[in-house]
Length: 287
Image (cartoon, rainbow, N blue to C red; front, side, top):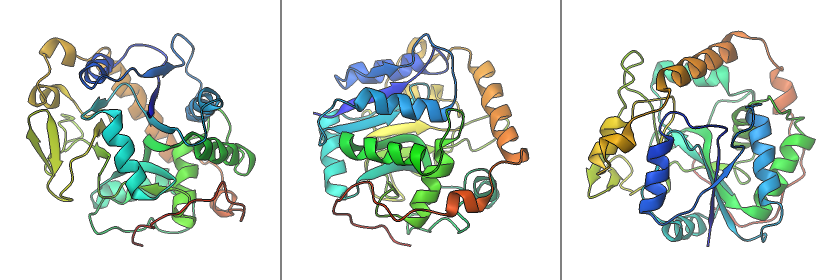
């Protein structure tokens, strides 16, 4: 059976909702980093590697953020869908409008090439949710540290985006939303979620743009989730966020600094070595 891993240092945002959804799906998540200071996304990634170090190579690992995620299905369904994809490492995918595409390319894409386009419009990698096998994930994270010099404070999404752009057979995205549905806010000021592709039915969602029934809903970008929780049948008490305004401000400041601070040059990330992290069959997505 697959394992669910979530990294969180303290209770914030929609952690209670996440835990309630795990209980509904009979899943016991492994919460990493609790009670420790937040260091950075690179540290989060290597701490996940440390946790899965002793797992069997073929055991499926699902990694999520515990503050803006709702499980919609059990681990059995999630694992079966992952096995059917034929990809070794799959991240969630975002559908972005023209302005946010430019923001994403500026903040996360240091590959020197445009992010590939997919038939569904879900084109942009989000590392807040990913799924792989323990052996493959260990090898990939080893490579992020060894070949890309990922430091504890580096943004893993930048490097994974580069690998995705250059080596899609090694890192892909769930562009049909078979497992993950990543949504953003429809309005930056009100933070109301963009739900135009979703239909709600009996505790599940259906993506009408892809014709799929995702297993995990991820409100990346700090979109408000109270309305989503209600439509999924959760109580208002469970859906009430903790320190949500403070959390939103911290994330907004982080992304602002990502955009304005000069960081590593494109060539440093785009220059990918030829070594592979493992052998696997893979059905590449469309370019």
